[in-house]
Amino acid sequence: MIAIDAGHGGHDRGCTANGLVEKDLTLRLSRILGDCLAASKLGFALTRKSDEAMSLSDRGDKARAMGATQVIIIHFDSNADEHVGRTTFYVRPNDSQASDIAANIGRCIPPVLTDRTLVIETSPDDWRRRANNVLRAHEATPALLIECAFLSKSHHAAFLRAPQGLATLATAIACGLNTNDTKLWKDPCSKLHQHLH
Image (cartoon, rainbow, N blue to C red; front, side, top):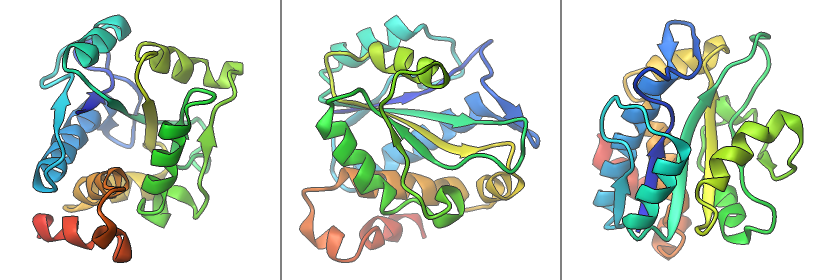
């Protein structure tokens, strides 16, 4: 069972930039990702299904109650410098399963969001403290936090606003979670794309 945890919600808007609001994007992306996982017959559940505020401990408790064996935490980011930022994966040190999943997902994330660079962070320095706190809520379960894009970057924002932008991103994440589907990896993402067109 894969728990999909849409960051922020309710009074907690997350970051905002270029007319985009993080809490809305995380929920929309999580719902589309759920559709992708259902299409590929992977079990999943959403920790947040509506615009509601949830504490980190409540998110962890809900994922455990669902019987989650993996947790995918969806976030977006922003920076005062509009030229800074790319898709970044955060995992706990020594969580090799989450690191492997991050690498698999990175193979399918559109290059416009990654700058053709796979970034997997584990170091607990101040810059990453928020990510570590989020991951700590799911301490007993392999967990991966994805900062999917930077709302402050104009071309990231344009990608997210495009009609198929979030669907393409959700397909990439689902693609990385289908590591047991050997046919899928011979032609990455093609099978899941069929469900979106």
